[in-house]
Length: 279
Image: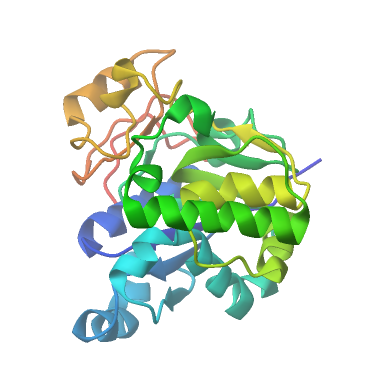
C-alpha cells in the first residue's frame, strides 16, 4: 500500500539555511508537499516572513503563528494543531512529518521512518518519566512541575488515565492523519510542553506509538554528538563521516550549519543522491 506523506517545515530564524533544508527535503522526496510554519513571533519579522518567506524558502504554503516566539517554541504541538485546523485538514495525506529547521535528514522520509508503522505516532527517544528522572527541565522547575501535575490531573479527570507517563524529544515526530484529527478535536490544554503532551495524548486517544530511532537512548553520551536537544550543534565533519559509512546515521540535530554541498550516502527515489547538494 502506498503511503501519502507530507512535510511541515517549522522555522523561526535563518531563512537562508532553511531554504537549503527545504531544497534537500524536496530533492530526497519528490512529489511530497512541503508546507511551512513560521514561529518567530509577530512584528517586523512576521511581516517580512509573510511577504517573502514562502517564495524564498520554496514552500507550498506558509502559516505564520500569531503567538509569541517563546510560546511557539514551548508548544510546538499546539502550533501544529492551529495550522491543521486552519489549513492542514484540507490537504491529502496519510502521514505528516514535522521537520524543524535545524533537523538534518539525509535519506527519503519513507526510509528514515521505515520502523514507524503508518498508523503509529512516531516519537524520538520515547522514555518513561521514571527513567528520564526529575532533573529534566519540564519536571524540575517549580512552574514546570506544577504544570505537569495539572496536566496529569486533567488526564485522570477527563480520560480516567492511570497509565505510565512518557516523555520524548520533540524533534522529528511523525503523525498519522487520524491522530491529528483526534488531537485537534481533544483541544489539549496549554500545560506542560509538547514533549510531554505528544506521548500522553497518544495514550489518552488510543493511538499506537513507535520510536523513530533517531536517538538510541535518553541517557546516552554517545548519542549526544549526533542527535540531542540541549547540546552544541552537530559538527559537519561528524555528519560527513556518518554519511560515508554504509551503516552510519542519517538524521542529525541540531544541525545549524548550511551543509551546502552535502554528499548524500545513496541514491534516493530520484536517483540524484550521492552527488553534492547545491540547492
